[in-house]
Every structure is written in C-alpha cells, then in structure tokens.
Image 1: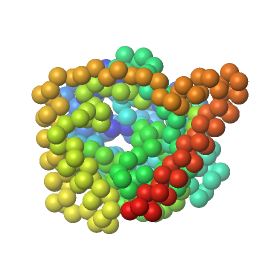
Image 2 (image 1 turned 90 degrees about the horizontal axis):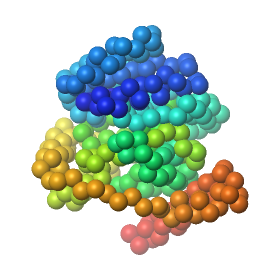
Image 3 (image 1 turned 30 degrees about the vertical axis):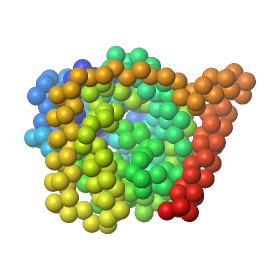
Length: 296
C-alpha cells in the first residue's frame, strides 16, 4: 500500500487489510512523502505484520517499485490507501493462484464508492485473458489495480514498475503479460473510491499527447530515462490544469451491465447473473479485438 496525504481514508483502508480472513501476510505501507498525519496513524497499529517506510515524494510509479522491492512473500497484493478490500479478498485470490499455476496475475470486480463511502455502482470487468491483454494495446485496462495479486517471481522477471507518475499499471501489465495469464474474479472483492480530483476521470488539453506517448511506451520494449522524464512532465502539466479548474460533479448513472444484473439477479441468482454478463462481455470484446486487427 503506497500512500500520500490520504489520512481521511487511511484507517478504513488499513483495517480492511487487517480484517482479511487470510492472515498469513506482511503489510508494507510505503509513505510517499506525506505531510499530513499518515505516520501517526500507522504507528497506532501494533501489528507485527506492518512494515512502515517513509520516503521523499517520488510519485506512485517509483513508490511502487521501491515498496515491491521489500516484498518477501510468494505473492504481491496491491492496495491503494483510499480504497477498501473486502474480508475474503486475499483468501479468494490466493486460492485462485494456488490452483491455477499458469496465471501470474488476478484481480476482481469492484464496487465504486464516492468520497463519503456512498455506493455508486459496481463494475463487471471481462475475465478472458485474451481480452485483458488485448485492450492494453490501445491503451486501456480492465484490471482494477488496487485489487491485483500477482506472483512475485513473475513481477521480478517483468522488471517491476516503471517510475512514471500515472498509468504505471497499464505499462507494467504489458510487461508481466509475457510471463503468464491474467484473470478477473467476477465477484467484487473491494470498494474503489472515485475522487472528484482524480486525473483518471478528468478531461484536460494534455490528454491526447498523454495517451499517444503512453501507447509508444507500451509498444516499445525499452523505456528510456528521457521517456520517463517526458511522461512525468506531461503528468505535472495535467495535474496543474486540474488544480486550476473547478471540479465538476459527475452524475453517475447505471451502466447497461448494472441494469441487466438488477433484472436477471432475482430470476437467475447473483452468481449466474454476473457470470452471464461477464461471458457476454468477453465474447463482445473478443469480436471487437478481432475486427480491429483485421482493419488495422
């Protein structure tokens, strides 16, 4: 868990990890130069599994790289300091990786919540390995980064996170994809917090250059220091733009998946309804990816 000035959410995030039904883990909390009460909050916990590190601010990409270098376990589980893991998350993901050695990375569906914890909806990501890897070329991702668990040996073979300040997940997925298969568990295993100032949900004039450059980095085998510097500069310009503009309230509406689920669930049951929706999405995206390859 990397954290930077998220004291208002930190307790809930930490306690969601300590409340896991699977208890055999080390909990690395990497403080990326916070100036709030993060350190004091963490130090209140006397759990021997917690390993707290403080470092000057480097951005999430480098913080993840440094934090994962400290990991000693067979698997590495990701978590953000403003999100929540449901109690069965670790047990479910560990069981999947234990039983499927050909898979190197597993994530899950999530519930979306706002700053106050209010439920906004739920996400129905595709589960097919071919889809999860295919969309990375565009670039896009159906993998919830805070819910990821991956094999540490595959992580190390892939070279670890690249020290960029945004979209470090998509860039890394394109590298670890060569080590084995991906999967999304259809049942939500966490709550993903949507913040009003999130760059991931904001339109800005730097976005077109930003995504073109990210695609270049995804398609290139080697990422140069100059690539990282240019990408991080784009991020800083985007961040400054977002800080200057007024935050617009996003009106959340039910997706087609949620509408279908609300109708199908009472008739078919929760598990069958969600698996049917994910199966339909897998098929639709496989067709889209196939057509893209034909016309490109």
